[in-house]
Structures are given as C-alpha cells and as structure tokens.
Image (cartoon, rainbow, N blue to C red; front, side, top):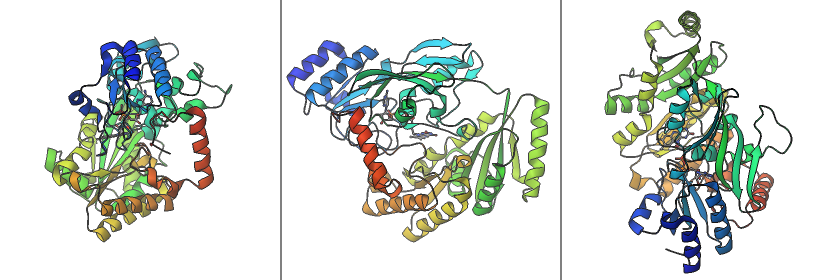
Length: 456
Ligand SMILES: Cc1cc2nc3c(=O)[nH]c(=O)nc-3n(C[C@H](O)[C@H](O)[C@H](O)COP(=O)(O)OP(=O)(O)OC[C@H]3O[C@@H](n4cnc5c(N)ncnc54)[C@H](O)[C@@H]3O)c2cc1C
C-alpha cells in the first residue's frame, strides 16, 4: 500500500468499512485503462454516497494523497490510471437514478451509472440521452462528463456538455458544491458546469449529474456511400453538412478500416477507398421517403450513383458494424494507438492527405475513421501493443497533432488529454492560456490531489 499510513487507512476504514480494497490481486484491475499506460494504485475505495466522497476528500487533503476517480476504465488517454499511486475511487456502486422528471425532461443520476443502462430506463418513456460513445455499454456518466464524451449522433445533438443542467461536485478547496440550475436557461453565476465537464477529474469529483433528455426520433435509417477516392469522399462530407434533411450522424471509414472490419467480422462493407455512413431521422415513413429522394438527387449532383449507396432500414445494424472498427484493426494488426484529433470540416481533405503521407514517410499503416461530420478523426497508428510506446511512434503522434493544429484544429475532440497527450498541449494552447488553466486548477484544487499529473 505504497504511501498510505496506518492512521490514514484507519480513517478510510471508518468511512468505507470493507469497501477499502488493499488486496494486491484485486487492485490489479485498476492499474490500466484502454491507453496502454500503467500505474499502481495504493488502494481503492468503493463509495455508496456523496457524503462518503466528501469525507474521503477530507482524508485525502489531510494526508495529501491523490484521488483518481474511475468509471468504466475505458479512457484512451490514461485518465483513470494512478500514475503517482494514490486512491482509486471506484464509482460502480453509485449508479442510481435519483430522480426522473418526465414533464421537464430531466434525470438526476449518480456518476457510476452505465450510459446504456440509463438509456434502457429512458427508452420506457420513449426518451434518450443522445451523445453515444462506442463504449456505451461499459462507460459511466461520470467518465463521460469528465471527458466530455461524444459519438456519431453528436453531429446533430452535440457532446454530453450540451445535455448537462447541473452537477454536484466535491472539490478539495471548498468541499461540496452544486453548480448549474434546473432551468433551461441560466446566467446567475459563471458557467462552472462547462468548466467541470471535460476537466478529466482534475478539478473535483462529480457525485451527481442533472441531465436533459430528448424524445426519441420516430424513424432512423442508416445510409452507406462508397467512393474510390478518399479526398473526394471528404468533399462529399463537407457538401452533406449543408444539406437540410435532418442528418444526425456523418461518419467516415478509410480503405484500411473497411478491409479490417470485413476481414475480422465479415461486415460486408463495399471494399473501396472510403465509406461514408449517414443516419437520417424522420417523423413518418413518408417523410423518410421524401428525405431519401432529396438525398439521392443531391448525391447524383455530386457524382455518386445509386449503386454506390446502400440503405440500412435498421440504422442499428449499420452502427453495430461501424462499432467494430477499432476492435477489428486491433485484431488484424495486433494493436493500435488511437488518436482523436478534430478540425473544422472544410480542413478534412487536407488533414487526411497529410496524415496518409505521414504513414508513408514513417512506413507505418495509419487507418483513418471517425465522426467526420464534426471534423473529428481517429487516426489509428497500427502497431502491436508492445511497440506502441517507442520514440518513433511518439514522433508520429507529435506529427499528427501538428497537422491538426496547422489545420486550425485540436489535439482531442473526445478522448481527453489525460497523460498521453499532455506533453503536446503547448502545440495547441499558448503560454498565457496555459497559465490561466493552471491558476484555475490551483484555485479549485489547491492541494493538487484531484487526479494529479493529468490534463495540464
Ligand atoms: C474502443 C473505444 C471506443 C471509444 N469510443 C468513444 C466514442 O465514441 N466517444 C467518446 O467520447 N469516447 C470514446 N472512447 C473513450 C471512452 O470510452 C470515453 O472517454 C468514456 O466517456 C470514458 O468513460 P469511463 O466511465 O470508462 O471513464 P474512465 O475511463 O473510468 O475515466 C475517464 C476519466 O474520467 C474521470 N472520472 C470518472 N468518473 C469521474 C467522476 N465521477 N468525477 C470526476 N471524474 C471522473 C477519470 O478520473 C478519468 O480521468 C472510446 C474508448 C474505447 C476503448
């Protein structure tokens, strides 16, 4: 139990009883997330209430011990890895729905609830929480809030930040705070909700979240469009963003990704240089037919004929195949390092071209897929896990980030900075702004116990 004194342990036991985990074998599950980074926790606790978390923060302050909140452990940036040891705060038992307000379309939840479990509850009322990360069956609302998670549907509905009304947060500066409001509009205070969302557990621990939810669309269909020119596909994507037929998602997969999904899972995507995936929403089947007609003539004007277009009348069938992208690349290439840069959509063709040349220069396969309707890309460097942390791979990563910044973009659109991108942050953020971010961190977390070493 590196760094934890008997006095500290006894205080923790008085709060959590047998929910203090010190067994080395059990602690192994907390050593890594999905980022290939590793660290050994001193111990873990499993809170059941926000009052317990409040008491925990007081103990951590007294003994100056890092606290590392952990949801589903699916972070790709090392967010929940205990790089300096410390206490893992495992939210698996704080997974309740505390209040559901149907008339105001709001739900108050604890952070440990799994995204798809919340949606299963909401679907009984024909409602849903739209931002849909690919890991929705494992990731928690706390982790999604901390990373400002998004997904294919974020093209229409935005990231989870757009769906938060209020948060209960335990800080090391002033203890428990409630930020936000139950109202749809609100300007009484600084927008601390937006500050906490995406802060990766470095400013405080989220213990409750008040979320907006939306009525489910009546009809959703999936459409795949294949094209034998990746650059041309990007131009089509830019053109599609100007089409007003209620498109809720625009995705792209390159030839490497398509071939990998087809090989690993026999997904049946047309083997081509690029496949664009769309989701269109409608309120009736007539409305959908009209939209498809508009789309078909729009695509013809862009040089795409009907034989390159496939309609999935069950959109989920298409998405279940798309979800296999990362996994398939790992299977076929023995591992991958997944980045998540974002650029304004009009810069996609240039960005993808430069990333592909980078692959040729370093003689390594880089697959490209992602939520391109938002300008979001997942360049995946295809190397086995054991070769992923070499200086050469770091160089490729650095170059990918430089390409993103040069094209007016950012290092991360949804996976966060964590530990894996921290050293590159100054490529994007200027020195004065970094200083301001540090001052905010010091104000909210003067003891530097909230997930230290991550993000800034
Ligand atoms: C195959 C794959 C596909 C993915 N696809 C997507 C995608 O489509 N969209 C997307 O956005 N992300 C995606 N991700 C990344 C990841 O799933 C998301 O970031 C997810 O929201 C993390 O949630 P989690 O519960 O697993 O959090 P964890 O990994 O446990 O933690 C993530 C961060 O949140 C912090 N945290 C957790 N709980 C709290 C809390 N209560 N208070 C404060 N901080 C907290 C942790 O300390 C850590 O910094 C993908 C990951 C993988 C492996």
